[in-house]
Structure formats: structure tokens, C-alpha cells
Length: 512
Image 1: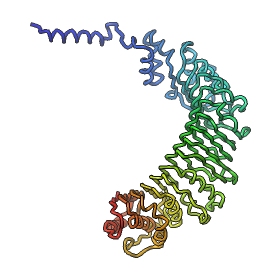
Image 2: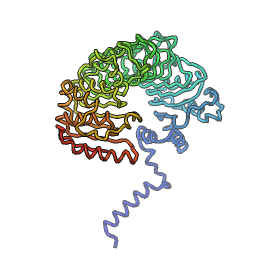
Image 3: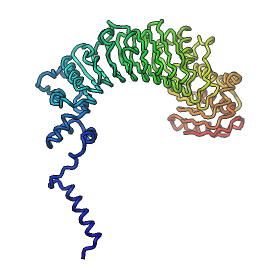
């Protein structure tokens, strides 16, 4: 006799089997709302999404109204000849190029585009056609990487779009030209992200009235990369929060005045052959600054960076000898970052601060600095620069040294008695700096040295910190690769170091 529980299991199985049986005619997935199905399709490559249109009329409707079209998975830029998107002929080198305009042409006229992304090698008329069609469908995010046979102009259709929120245009050689500022101002009322790469500006070398409050009232993120010919740039967008400027090698002057700017990255910029270059930054909300591999400007000015939390600084050095003016500019830059809580300095900074012209230049103290990371070529010539940075870090908690050059001759000169009571010239120098380094030594708790080889310069500094760092709790020494003979010497140095009885700190020493 069949029990009630068995009957219930039988009924449950029959109902679920019926729902999962493809032959019973029930299609529960198709009954889902369009937004949910669009979200499911979004996880598939564009070709797979297109293939669903053959399933049924319901799926054809989903494909023709799909809001996110990402063609970057099927089309790439090659070195093949230009393909005209206005024709139906398919190039053997770019089999998908006619697919994009066909998809847009078949699109439901009443369905808006949320995202359109593609990479293509095409004509300017073909690019204009795609963008014009996207604007007609009220596209919100347009991400384009394009290669053309000749220079092309910034597409006019974009300027007056009320729907566009994100626009990214990356050009391959030979690049594109901006329209005159008089034509571009007054548009982009809704844009909040703009990224432009490989812009030709030889006939428009000064952009002083484009990136303003009136032109981009809602712009929050701006990325300018490889602006060839650009000499003067001013950015004063009211809502801007994130600014990146890269590979603008001919830049002479940079003026940034943004009340809401939080993140700034300037990389590989400024004309190294122009002595009168300058920059001015006024950003009271700025929290993160990356100033990397830039040529040293003639003058530097940073104001109101009171909210700064993190900064990273590095330079491109054209000459070994730094003029007094450019040394002052570097000191002004670093002093302008004095509110930072975390600071990373590349090796060029230490070289500059160790310059023979640095005797009369002093850094403003980093009174909030807790973490300092230095990438250094550790040699005796850079010791004064290190001391200068230490003097300016009176409340430092963690010091990280990353040694990036092994100086094969100098650093391989082992000192067998490094940890005895004799002192080297480097140790004598550090001992002479005790009074000026007292605040630094009184707060330092953690030291990490990467690439440690137990050579004279490194050991002298480690010995000094152990001896006088009264609050030092931890010293981690991560050694570089070494041969068997060096390894034996290291074991001797380490054993002496672990028994460093006259150290004033009780720091735990760890080798890694």
C-alpha cells in the first residue's frame, strides 16, 4: 500500500520532471522579464548572444533590444587594408567588420543602447556612421579603439549627445585631431568619463578653455594619453575626481585647479629640454598622487593638498648634473606632498637629493608620514639623500627599502668584520647625523629591506638603526640570490648580527 509520503514524492517528481522536460512545450526561461534575460545574456560572448535569436520570436526580440553590445571579443585591429563599413564586402583579414553595422541596422528603433564597445580598422566615414547610429539609440557608454589610414577629426555627433555618460576613444597610428574649442564647448552636458588616446595637437597646442566647468559640468574622470604637440593644459572641471595624464612629452605648462579632485596620475610628461616648464596644482580634496617618470620642471607649485594620503614620486633624468633651479623645483614638489601618510620615492629622487647642489635646500617635514618606501640604488653617493629624507620624516612608523641595483663591484666587497666595534666611513657618517635624526629614530618601529646582501652600505645603515632606534620592534631583511661562497659568509654575518649585544632596541631580526 502506497503511503502518503510516497504519494507526495511521486507528485513532486512528476511536477518537476514536467517542468524540466524539453518535450512538454513549457519554456519557463522565456517567461522571465527582459531585464533579467538581458543580464543572463550579458555573461555570454556577443556571437553566442546573436545565435540565441534563432530559437524563437521571443529571443529575436531580446537580441534586437539587447542594451550592451561588446564586439571586442570578435573583432581586433590588424595591419590589413582599410575596410569600408558602408559596403557589404567582407575583408578576409577582418571577417567581423560588417557584423557591427548590420547588428545596429536591425536593432529595434525604440530600444536604447547602454554600452557599445568595438575595436576596428576602418575609414573615418565608417567610424562616423557607427557613432551616429549609436547616438541615435541614446548610447550611454561608448568605448572605441580604432585605426585609420589617415588622421581623422573628433566625431561631431558626440558633442550634443544628451545620453552619453562615458566616452573612450583610443586611436592607433596616425591619431586624431580635436575640433576647435569653440565647437566643443557647450556640449558634453551629461558626460562623466572621458578618455582620449593619441591626440594630434600641433595646430592646437594650448588647451586652456576646454576642460572647464562650463564645457564639462559633470565630468568626474578624465584620462589624456599621448597628446602630441600639447604644450599648455589647464583643467578646472568643477566635478572632476580622477585625472590621468600620460605620455605628453612636449608639455611646458600644467595648471590643475579642481575642488573635488581625489586622485591624480601624471606619468612620462613634460619637455626635458625646456628649462622653463612649470606646473601648478590646487586640489584641497586630493588623496592620491602618482607623479612618475616625469621630466623635472623649472618650477613646481602645489597648494592646499591637506587631504593627501598617498603619494608616489619618480623622475626621468636627462642629465646627471641637476641645476640649482630644478633641484629647488624637486624640493618644492616633495614639500607640497608633506601631508601624505604614505610616500614612495623612486631611485631618481634619492639621487637628486644627494646632489652636490643640495647643500642649501631642505625638505618640509612630513609630519603625517607613517609609511615610507624607497626604491634605491644603494651606494655611498646616495647616503646624503637618504639622510635628508629621514630627517624630514619625524613620525615615521614603517620604513621599506627596495634595493634595485646590485652594484656588482662595490656591493661585492665584503667586510668580514662588519659587525665588530670598528666603524666604516658610512657608519661614521650615520653616527654624525644622530642629533638631526632623533625624531626619526624615536618613532621608527618597522624596517624592511629587500635585496639585502650584507654589503657595507646596507649593513652600516642596518647597524645604525638597530643601535639607535629605541622604539624599533621588527627588522626584516630579504636577501637576494647568492652563490655558495657568499652564502657561507652570510651565515657568519647573520650569526654576528643576531648577537648584536650593544643595540639599544629589542627588535626581532628576521632573514627571508
